[in-house]
Picture: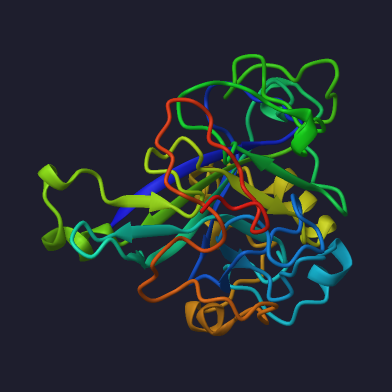
Length: 304
């Protein structure tokens, strides 16, 4: 198995040494689909396939209210009915040129309490995500390393700390929130015998990206905000395992067995094939290796 990590940093304030935090495990995905309620609300399909974890009611028009009405979640804490999603990973067979899905081994979300706003450093304390909150980190067009937070694609309401992973919130973003870090596991070793170094790197994201620079994480809040705030305020005891991020040590949370999470699945809105052996990536996502930014195509303007 191999992991891929991404950071989603909300309008926050963070500092060096990690203080209170917790690790939220999510089991199997609830769906793989070309649905994106943040970038393409109500659009079916959206641009590329996402792997989705969390609340059952994930849909093209998800709202805080609809997520809170979910009957289950694939994540450990039952009071968290949020959704977490990111591009799906595929293997392109060097012999057949067909695309095959790579198995997802789950998601681990780190909720990190960092920065000058932490009460540990004399700050006012971090705040729970408000109702209706959503955010993304990353750019599906990127094919090389750069730093660019684009207010046109749902990022203007969030900001990095002045030292990225620590420091102060910018004055334009005064409300300090938790810092989300996604750790995703993919079973790339299942394909180890089917390619060699001479074949070139065979794994590609659903965006048509073989480099990894386009990897991005999305979040739509579905938390019981009172529970979330109480966890932020109280699960930071240096004398127990809350200080080590052990979610079982935070008694505010109601936890469920993994088997319950694995059984939670979203209701599909599309009948499109995104699994199995595919002649091309779903949608119009030709492989573009960069280093320049990729061109985003719609199904309607897909080049031959």
